[in-house]
Image (cartoon, rainbow, N blue to C red; front, side):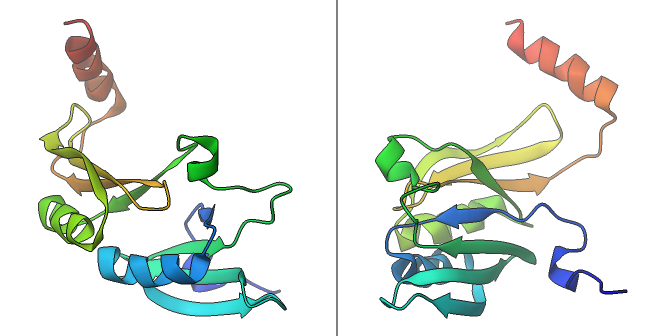
Length: 151
């Protein structure tokens, strides 16, 4: 029996589209310490498919095909966010901002047990940088959420 590659075993793998994917690969190296696993080029030299590993997670990316897939800058907003679980989200955010990301939210403790920070990359994608602080059962998260949002 054929098995999935190890990098896909326990994950939903995001596949993002960037007009100018070559630049995005370089940017994600600087901003998030990404390592490129491989890339497949189209005849015109644009990226058909590339895979990166970022903090142990696989992210797929490529240039959009303009039929089914576009990118956030063309839509005018992001349609999904990418969550990175990191040991120090303040340091991860500083690195991302230094590389050219726009800070959206500085690290803040959230009701669900993590410190959350967020940035928008130059390609329009939103990255949520999470540092886990405490494990909570769903009832406690719901109780805390109701307390926060009822104010």
